[in-house]
Length: 258
Image (cartoon, rainbow, N blue to C red; front, side):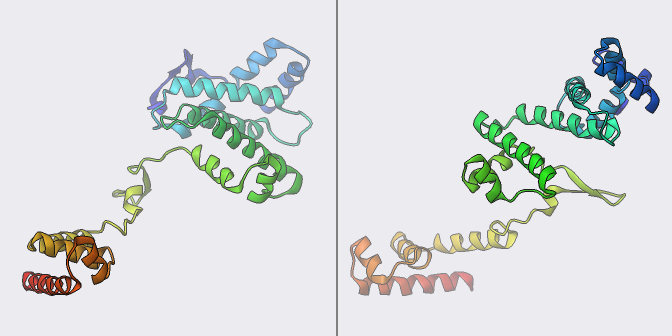
C-alpha cells in the first residue's frame, strides 16, 4: 500500500521538507529570475503535495513509483506556468495540474486501448471546455463544441466516453460500518432475472416434449410471429395441417404444465 511506503523513487517521503508561504514566495521570485537551485529547492519542498495527490489513485494496479514520477511532471508544469500575480495559492493551482497529468498517464496506459485520434479529439474537447468556461462562465454545449472542432455531435460523446477510466464491478461505493456495497449490487439486469430464467427453462422443457414438426410450428407461430399461411408455405404443408398440429401442440403443452 502507498500509505505504508516510506521510500518512493529513492525519496524518503517521511523526511520531505515543508516550505512556508514566505519561503515559497521568495523562491518563486528567484525561479522567475532563472535560479535553478531555487527551482530544485521549490520542487523538493512540494513533493508532499504530489504524494497527497497520487494517494487518490491507489488500487488501480499502477506502481506508486510510476505515479509519483508522473505527479512530479505535473508539479514541474505547474511551477513553469504559475503566475505570481494571480490571487491564488500555488497548491490550489498545482493540484489540478498534477491530477490531470496522472489521469492522462492512466488513460494512455489503460489496458483498454483507445486510438490516438480518439484520444486527441478528447483532449481538444477538454481544452476547449476549459477555455470556454473561463471566457463565458459556463461550460459549452455539445453543439458548440462540435461546431468549434468541426466534428459531429456523436463524435464528442464517443471520444469522451472512450477516455473514461474503467471501473471494477467489485469496487465498493458505500460502507455502513459492517459491510461494503459494491457497484455490482446496484446493477439491475431486466433481461436475465431469476424469474425469466426459470420461465425460459420451463418453456424449453415444454417444447422438448413436442415432436419436431410441432416444435417448429409453435416456434414460428408464437416466437417468430408467423401466420399459419406463412408457416404452411415455409415447411411445405397445408394451412389446415398447420392449424391441426398447432392445436395438438398446445394440448401437449397444457398437459405438461398440469
